Length: 440
Image (tube, rainbow, N blue to C red; front, side):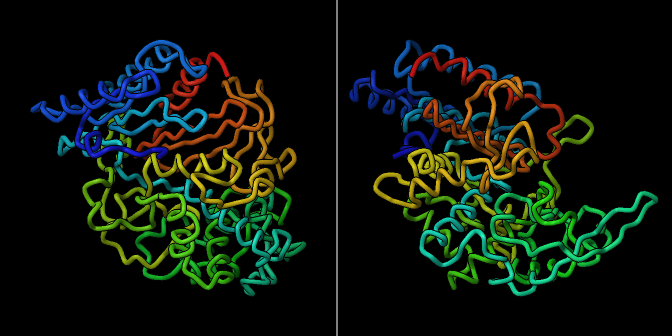
């Protein structure tokens, strides 16, 4: 299973495995790990040297020391990097501390707040409903959420303040998927009105009201731009979650669990923490004056969050999910496979192709944006290695992911860091991963 971790690895075994390793040697290593009195932090690297499957493992495993430098210097507390190629794990490393103050080492099955990485499964959910004939991407949102029938836009004036004008047209489902609905996170020209309505920032876990109730208030507020005219990153996917609830007749957590997480065996992915998994939830750190400290708790956008003890009422499709690197890699591998994994068909290949095409022309050039993902249009525009057609995104806690169909590559990188500043770990990791790909 992609991302599967044995009980031995979860309890701290450092295991080498892969196509060149005899099964007997693997079990000897596992047995040795069990016998040690001081188990190492869990990590799994499939090979330590040589070249196989177009991968230079000597180059790839240089990632370990590079990542360790970030924890040694205090730039990061901990995290996990998981790399798959052609459906096989070629690198997996959990590093640093899950809780630095408790001296609790990170494990490869630990659970992270994935924030905006929640947007991709919800976007897939919308595509599933279109395949079932229950909605169309061209539908106005008001067909399902009547409060969006007539919306307004705040237009900033040169001397300060703003005018409120009617929207030129209705917002569509496709506008929400592409973040071209003109809806931000409450920080636009009419920010004071959004603040007065209690709708600013992406954090929902501590709310005692449903996202649907918040969305109803949201529709009456002036938006940041006219539909279809600008790329405005914001509550779009939270609104899509409300659409899913209305169309499916299920709560968003029930819908995602039944239709995506259970079929893909994403057993540790949910909106709120199973009490049995409390010790697996990683601690969030915030950079203050160059030092990392545990984020304030409880609640708040920068806090440890209400994922364990909160009201469990608001299911935020835009930023509310918890997951593991292994679970999320299974979701991404499904997309790379054209909508199927291990016999579970989630989407048709045509829907995946539509999601990963550019839908926004040059609104966020040089990249494009599809139905839930950034899409790479050129190789040379950014100076970072990759491939045309690569798609991905990230999360507020300094996490990132991408899928490269040309290379058969899935990368999931999870940390729990607010205020990351100029930490260059994601760029360095990307460069070193591609530097290790030496053949098809």
